[in-house]
Image (cartoon, rainbow, N blue to C red):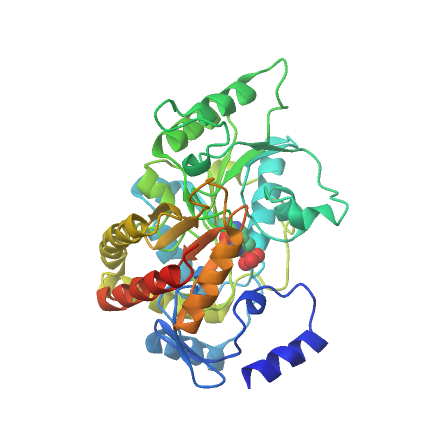
Length: 433
Ligand code: PMP
């Protein structure tokens, strides 16, 4: 039945489809960390809606909250509502103390890309400047502006990209250093390069309206920035008065073990974009948090029909309660330690695992030819398929598509995570080069 539906999708849906090409299943029902296909096969889901389902599929308390809200008020444009007001207050309350007072909230269209577009527009408005600095390997979305600041050339090549003024800088990708250095001689030269370009008043780039960064690159291959790089990025942007926009669409809402990843790095951004896991259960909404000093919007300056989603607010409030009550962030940190140890164990027996890295529950297993060190995308695709055949869903990503990405629900248990790594290990060994 899955195959029949996949064939039908081929016939009637857009050629831009991605997930079912590498994971050829049709979905029926999800519960917790598991999802079932149309034929009744059950999979442990380490894709979790691309990081959306932070509390797993169909969390009963979140479903109840959203269902009750649907009967009460489903859509509210940008009028004040009690549920929105409470959600805003609670979201601001999740910020570290100094930012709680300093930041304002703007609800954008429903997707992460909508939030990124709003962030870029706000930074341009507030600074009166035009350029934006972004990073190699970054992914910020598929709309024109978000695509322009994404470091991946592939989706942009085929369309004339009408968004000028984007400058890309090297990201600290230590497994494949963009400057060709080895960890032994690295002195965070990527940060030095960035500082040189930004502070060069005579050459380099025009002073940008913003620097936009993912602190852990997601689609780029699950690459956590190094703490020293982030510290220096914050210092130089602060010194120059360039707003630092942190894209927390994937890293936010507990994914890295703190509410936002910037807390783990000990820096304070000027603008934060959040979306995917805000509702905890897959209801679309995006949110910009930004320093009050940037609040230069004129009334109506950034409008849209879907600004905030009452159902997502209701579910998101329930999610915040569950996260606090069940100590979900503590679980993320405990599972991080478990994954770090278990993936290191896999790397020790699979010489084609070049690197394992991650933060919180955002992990990457990068595969390479053991002889040449070249990225091994075919091996990653075969391993992904072998994992699916064993009942495990993992995503691939990275510049060469040679990275297996693990993004389980934040509620995954120790036993479920052990089961996932066992299945991944079996798939890796079954595909040994
Ligand atoms: N930013 C980041 C860091 C993302 O990972 C994504 C989605 N993968 C986006 C932005 C875009 O979000 P959306 O697909 O909801 O537009």
